[in-house]
Length: 467
Image: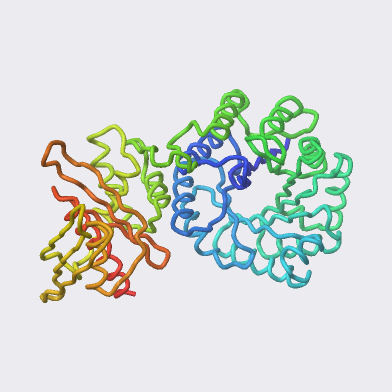
């Protein structure tokens, strides 16, 4: 009896219907691993820092399932993807490419020969790094048979250990799928050396039946989804093998005793975002909180959503400071996390230090700020009339330094209570698409704001000088 691999592509196919937070993706992967899913397919890398952390975290959490991550056909991100994936117990690199003339010409702007060469080069590069490489032929059922055969043969020659053919249109009946697989084996003898996978679109609600028909003709891997999507259903396929394994002379590794319960958990997670921290939605984002149970991945994702692009060293510092705060209180809000980033990340030498400031304001005069800063041991000062005390102070600093940066956010929080309460300010400045934050604490709101502004400003200047 042959063992059929089930490759879950739910997370790779998330587009519009739902989104999962960083922590939910890890929990999702652990559920699939516990269920006995052979392959867990993940989204590829678009943001190197965030996506690499996501892949590394999932790879560390999964004990038995293979973790598959796609690379760009150009090969530009193969090394980055492998670096994130290589610690997985069973890593797999995927190369997805169209094989039908329509998609090659109009989606990729390539000629068939150029596409063939690109596929061969990408597969070879992946095989040099990873022992398990999957080539996915998109729109295979609408491809010219000879061309499809040549592409698959080249991919196997260059090191592909699994080849998956996709019925992207989803317009085939089970008998047509069976005939397609039969002819593919006849035209491509090298397929007998590797795992042949089938991915069926469910456009006419025939994906499950077509996948089983492909298995009857020799396919040994099926692309499925644990949550309802436009491919074969994990639950349906698993139940078919459980009931008809003798007839099909094939079985799957799915633990069917846990199937219903885990699929229900997955559905709740996808429909309601009920597992983990809810950082997948922008609604009410300021009300979201982290707790002591959130790991560094969840904290890093929250930091990224606040607009920061931190180094690994600064991410570790922020997480350490977050843990200290979370140990003392039940929840840490995003505003508090902002302050943690401001006070913990990217601490740099002071290019400008505050010496003195004088603010004049009232209901009958415009606010005026006289700021004196110290740079390289020398005093530099400036005066500015603004629309308020804070505006005047920030404009005076800009006049002194000659630097203007977009004020992305200004936050004020009370740290202590009473008439002489301490005020904490967080200032976020944007430069070159990146956000830099500074934090200041004082009984004087304006003083705290000036400290925070200078802290953020010094970080920008320091990084610009380093670059």
